[in-house]
Length: 239
Image (cartoon, rainbow, N blue to C red):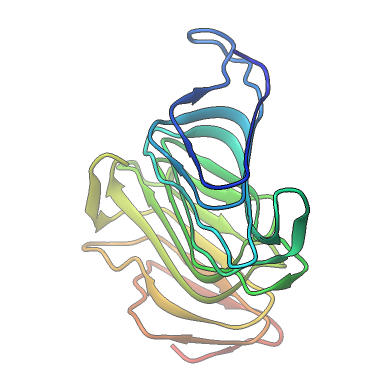
């Protein structure tokens, strides 16, 4: 409890509950580091200060940490080429899914220097924000909280890349996601262009939405917002 947890597997890695906490009700958390040569999955929640999960495989290996009870101060998730003995610098095309019981702060997802990243799906019972870039083929981010202004999505890193984005601020909880939109702001920025596959596609009124891009932004799904702000000197919006 309160110390670092480091788990490495040359193949697939499936974790039970990991509680890197300083005793029952403790506030000092240790870091959790997971590294595998194949898929990473879980059967129990992970509690940590900083959670880092990496797979290293020439063909790409998924990270699926979708337990609704996960509770980490920050998460860093990487699907790379290479091997456990020599983790590659290129992203690999395999999916990442992560859920958090409360707020989620991303310190980086697929921040390799090359390659093609896979789909990324994020869910949280509070706000979703970032301190490092998220690179994805398709990015889906959803918050579930009944109180307006709590379940915001703020993904404004200048190095974000995604071919498509789907962003939802909803009522409900992680255990029982709601169908109704909630008045919580959504912000997304990317270095290039992207397609919006949906923003606030639930029922009822939604919050403000701000988009920024370094290229063309199009849509294949509806965008619901209280107010819509479009930024980017090199952006061209077709909505």
